[in-house]
Image (cartoon, rainbow, N blue to C red):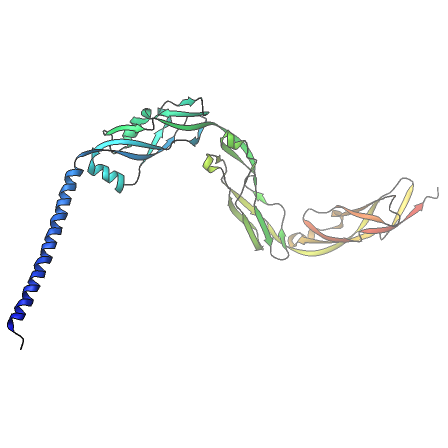
Length: 332
């Protein structure tokens, strides 16, 4: 049988462990309270800190554009309570300052072919946008550099980036039309002078069998250089028709040399062509012409050339491409 004093000893050990844990918890709580009180005292005092702001310039002088910004960041030395500075620096996103250039004096920089403004001249604009308007002690850098250029306008062609594959026996019928063939670029002369054309976004159409009416955006690769377009998108109309194959026989005309009469063998050719179904009944032989231009150096045959074909058909082939001939002498 276990003696009773062993149970008393276990209880004393457990009590001691519990009291030690409680002492540690009380110590930690007191430590945290002390730190909190210390932070409150410290953060309630006034401090000086440099706060970073991004600067955006707008409203440049008439007929000018901002082509480059040398200094887009300013640092404001602000004197305020620690709470406010901590919140602004670590808990709040960085603010942006919008500077109206029409309200400040812009100086020409003789060394860099650019311009600059004095930071002090924008201080009032900064105060009106800042959460510490009365606590700004200093702003630096003391000058902000930027480049202004005269704006010009230039009209350039619009080039289509288009790949069309119609369905079998379907073709583009007539002309592809667009709502605009040109656009006017406006921006810095250093950029505009080098631009010859603007392209559309790439469009690939496959297996199409009907008319297409689409909108295509123009690609402006100079948008970051402050170049704007008068036309940003165009309407595109692609007429598509189903075609069928047909053929026709026509006589061959001859450009005969003076004093000679030429007889061709054969005297007609057969032309194979594709035509839209809706135009099939319009076709007649008067719409085609073929010609032989007599060549003295060609002893055995003469070459046949198609001189006239309707603009709404697509020639597949014609035969023969050459014809034999006889020169008939006049009996006079």
